[in-house]
Picture: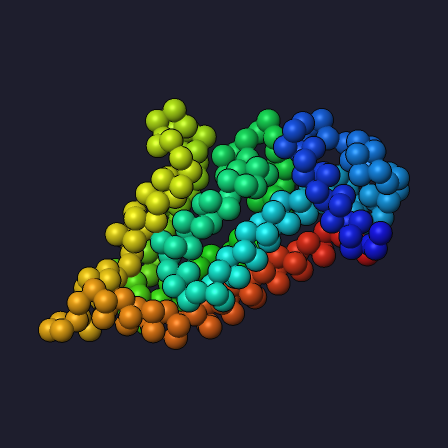
Length: 249
C-alpha cells in the first residue's frame, strides 16, 4: 500500500471510530489496530491524535467541496445559492463528523471542536471571503437580488443554512419525514430570500415569459460559473494545504 493510500485508510478508520466512540475514547492504539498498521505508522503521518482527527474533519469537508465542484462544472445553474445549499444539505447528512461539528456534539467531538475552531480560523475566514465573492459575481450577472447589501445577503445565507443544519438535531421530532423534503424547503427559502425569480428574470418585460427568463438565467449562470468555480477550486486547494500541514514532515 502506497503512503497516500495508507494515510487515507487510517483517516477512514479514525473517522469511523470518532463517530462510534467519541473523541475521549478514541486512541492511536485502537486506530492502528483497526487499520492493521503499527502505532508507529500512524505517528509517521501525524504528530498527535488531534492532528489526525482534524485531518478527518478536513477530508470530510473536502469530499463535499469536490462533489459541489463536479456539479458546478456539469451544470452552471448549480452555482445558484438555492441549488448549492440543497445539495450541500443532502451531502452533509452523509458526513457524521461534520454533523457533530455543526451541532456542537460534545459526546463525539469533545475538545476537538474548540481545537478545530482555532486551527481552522484562517481557513474559515477564507471560506467567508470566497462566499462573499460568490454572491458578488451572482449580483453582477443578475442572478441574485441587488436591493440589499451583499454582507446582509451573506449573513442571511449563513444563518438560514446553519439553522437548517442544526434543526436536524434540535427539531427532529417536528421535521418533515424525508431528507429530500427538508432539502427542498431549504432551497425554496434561500431562493425566495436571495434569488431573482424565473418569472421576473433580468430584462423581463413584453414577450419575456418564464421560458425566456429561464433561458436568460442559464446564459447568465454560464457566464458567471467560471469565476465562481475558480473560487471554490482555490478554496479546495487551501483545504488540501491545511491537511498537508497536519501531516508530519
